Image (cartoon, rainbow, N blue to C red; front, side, top):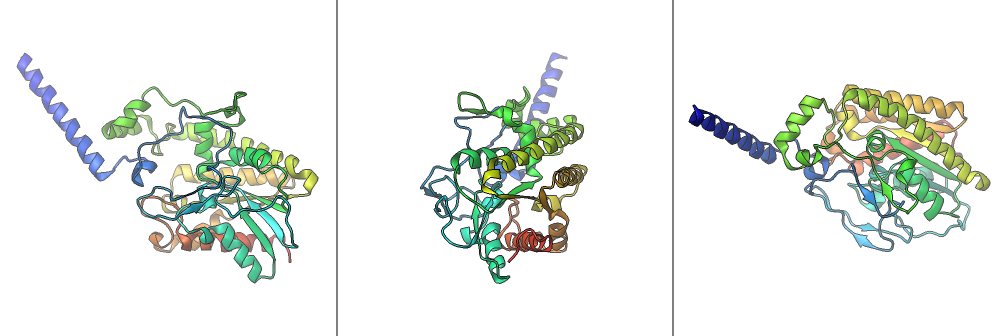
Length: 346
């Protein structure tokens, strides 16, 4: 009988090991960073040495990615943008665009990011605009705010476009709000569950954990109910962040415009969670409108433009950022909304 159980145990171990190898080879439960050729990465429990999420200033590098290789040139402020003075020197309208990797233009050359394409289309329509891209990969509205408050302090702009997409809801879940910033100058994110080290090391465990716990997003340890509650909380937080931007720029008469938009994965993979995020966008837009904050929501417009197209024309197989073609569609949608609402005029 004892030998029987040993055989059973060996069979179980062999099955688990075989499943582990199969899942690793197929990438079935690979996280985002692993799918683009990098190591496992998580925001949970991270401690950043500063309050700011920017690149090293005055550097050049090419982000590691298995699907594309576009060089970045970083200016003195730590952003993927040409160098610029705090005060504009000509009659051009100056527009700062905040955001994460979708604003920074991950997956495209510098001149094919949507903020730079926006400047090009505004010029065609007779609007002389200097659009400066302050987006940083991995950032969120809270990081965007402290960067503008401290690093870009004194930089004058006529408009600041605060970009928000669905990833900002999961960012909030893992990072929290302003409480992430500690008095010692570090930033601390929320802690992950006790089993995260197991999840990190085993693809088989990932499958079991995600199925048992009902996690809809890879590497985000939250079920649907918890995600929905977090989204409601994030709406209030991001509404307060917009208020902080307004107070920060009031003396400069800078106009704040909030941009809400869908990402390629929102369009490609529809789910209850994505539907909730869209509803949260509508709730945020309603709150901002009640406070007389200019807001453009291109979620549906962008989704309509892209829904009937081959998704590989505008995004990558694994990375899920836009290609130049996708950023071009986004820039056109943003410009159309700005002009139709009369937010930027000739």
